[in-house]
Image (tube, rainbow, N blue to C red; front, side):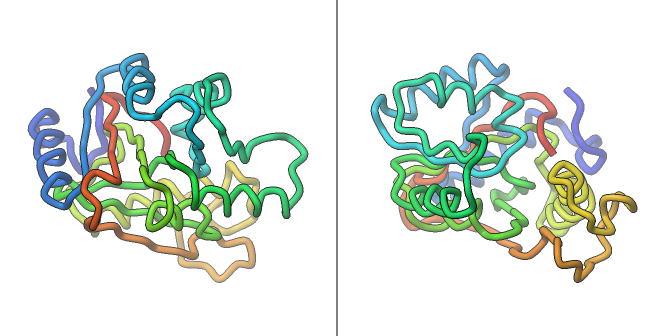
Amino acid sequence: MNIDDDLETFDVDQQISTLIHNLSARNMKGCFVNTREELLSLLKELIPVGSSVGCGDSVTLEETGILNFLRNGDYIFYDKYVDGLSKEQKRTIYLNNFSADSFLSSANAVTVDGKIFNIDGNGSRVAPMLYGPNQVIIVIGINKITKDTDDAIKRARQIAAPLDAKRLGKNTPCTSLERCIDCKHKERICNDFVLITGQFTKDRIKVIILGENIGY
C-alpha cells in the first residue's frame, strides 16, 4: 500500500488499528476493508433496504462505485448529481439530507487520533455530518489518514482544495498555482473549516477505511 509522505515512515497496519481505536474512544466507529467489493458489501449491511440516503459531494463516492450502488439499490436516494437540476432543486436535496436515515460522504482528512477534518464551500456536505441524519458513513482511502490536525489542515488546503476547485471549474488562484494562498476570490471554496472530535450518539458516525489511495 502507498500512502502520503507524512505517513510513509509508519507501519500502515498499526496506524489503521490505532485510528480505529481512537475513533471508538471518541464515540465513533471505524472499519477497515481491503477492497471495493468488501466496501459495497459492508454498505449493504449498514444501510437498510427502503431507507432514505443522502450524500455529500465526493470524488471518493464516485470512484468506489458507491453512487451507482445507491442509484441501483432499493433506497430512497437524494441524488444531487442528476443532470439539469436547478439551484432550488439542489437546495431541496440539501435540506432533505438532514432528515435522511443515512448520509454518505468522504472527508478531506482523518487524523490517527480519531478526528475528522473537512473544508467546505457552502456547508452542504459538512452540515449533515454534524446534525440530522441518524447515521453518517464517511469513506476514505488510506491516503487521507494524517498524523495530526495540523497535517489534516495542510492536506485539505494544499492537496484536496486545489484539486477540487479545478474539478469544479473554478477560477481561483489555486487552480493555476496548485496550492492554497488563502485567497478572497468570489469563487473560493474554502469557506467552512470543520473539525469533528467526537459524538454524543455512539457510532452515529462510521468511518470506513479502504485499503487503497482514492479520492483527494
